[in-house]
Each structure stands twice: as C-alpha cells, then as structure tokens.
Amino acid sequence: MGVAETGVALMMVFLLASCSTLDTGNGATVSGITDRNGVTVLSGGTTDQRVQTIAGRVMNPSGADAADFGGKVFIVHNGDRQQVTPATCYESDCQPGEWSYSGDTVLTSGSNTIQTVVEDATGNQVYSSSTFTVNADIPPRDITVTLTWETDGNDVDMHIYDPQGNHAWYSDLQGIPGGFLDLDDTDGFGPETFTMEQATPGTYTVKVRYYSTHGVEASVPVTVRVSLNEGTPMVYTHTFISSQANYDDETNDWTVTTFTVQ
Ligand SMILES: [Ca+2]
Image (cartoon, rainbow, N blue to C red):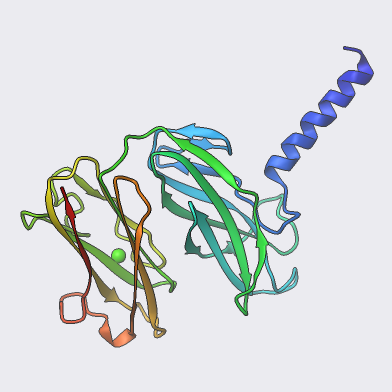
C-alpha cells in the first residue's frame, strides 16, 4: 500500500471511528453499554452480564443556550421505554447543547436492541439514536419482573412473593431462594428487576409500594412488566398520588398481578 492509499485508509478508519462515537447528527447517541464489572460493549458486541448501564449523549430540545433540559429522555430496550435523567455534559468533547445520560437496563437472553429517544416539552419525539444491538450470552430466565416509574427523585418498591410465601424486597433482595431482586432504586425511574432462572412451580404475587415521595408532589405513573420464559412481557400500569406514599403501611399497596409457573 502506497502513501496515498495509506492516507485514504487512515481517513476511512477515522471517519468510521467518528461515526461510532460522535454521531450526534440525529440528536441522540448510545455510546456503549457497561456492566457492573466495568466492561463496556459497543454495538454489535456480545456480553455475558445481564445488568447493563446504557450511556450516551442527547441534544437539548430547548437549544444550546438553555440552562435546563427542555424535554424527556427515554431508553427504549426491545421496544419498552424507560425514562432517564439527562445531566450537563462536562467532558472535553461536549458540543454546545449536548447533554449526557445514563440508565440501567436488564438484558434478555439472546438479541437485544437499544435506542435512545428525546421528546420535547410538549411530548413530541424530536431526536432518536441509531439502534444499538447487543447479544446477551446469558441463560434464559423463567421469570423477569421489571418496575419503572415516571417521576424523578422518589422511591417506589417492588415486592415479590413466591408460592411458599417467601418475600423478595429491598430489605431482602434474595429473599426468594433462586431468585434475585437486583437493587433498590430510591430516587427515581427504576428499574428494579426481579429475575429467577429456574422457578419453583406455583403461583407468584407481585406488589408495589410507594415508599417515599422525597418531596415529589406529582402523581406517579408506574409500570410493571412480567415476562415468563423470556417471552413478550405482560404490561401493567398504575398511578400513585403523593398522599399514598407510606413506607410501613400496606393500605395503598398496588397488587399488580399473580401468575402461575407450571
Ligand atoms: Ca425503591
């Protein structure tokens, strides 16, 4: 390869690298996903870790000079939307009007698609990233239950009961033998995710409690998704109001659903 060809090849490599990391032309990017061991996977890659942090950049619909973010940011995983909070972008390569975001999601066994979209203040989708793909080389789960909510800063909790009455919750994340509630999100959006690889047959119950407003007065739209055998999730929604927040009173608990594992 001559000098000229080498130059062209280097330019192509540079352009490809630029497209994968700095492509904000459509107003949103997914720069990578990172597992809890700190290992980052780029689009098209494979991971053996179920819980991943999705990160990237979004443009502010209110423009480069606005002090506040004028809209909402959602991570769309396999078609399901989950809201995340954008933050001021401080890295040296941040463009004017560009904000950062990150949020956790739980992959399903096999192929996963991830996209980030931005809505303006009136709810119109104004930006969307390219679709990020990742293959999760993880065993399929009999049960996956995911809790998310649409307010920032408050605490909603998932409670799961197995056929024997064992209870998985924030105070006992592995209270159901063989099951695993991944974390207690206390400041907004979730997700809190319960997974069980080989479920004991019988009937399971899912409940949700509004633990604390932490000063949030708005009503709280809550979504629970239940997927059995990694199939299409059943989706349940509910709205709490601020007066229903109570950490130790079950009166206003939302009994989401019961489901039976054969
Ligand atoms: Ca919580």
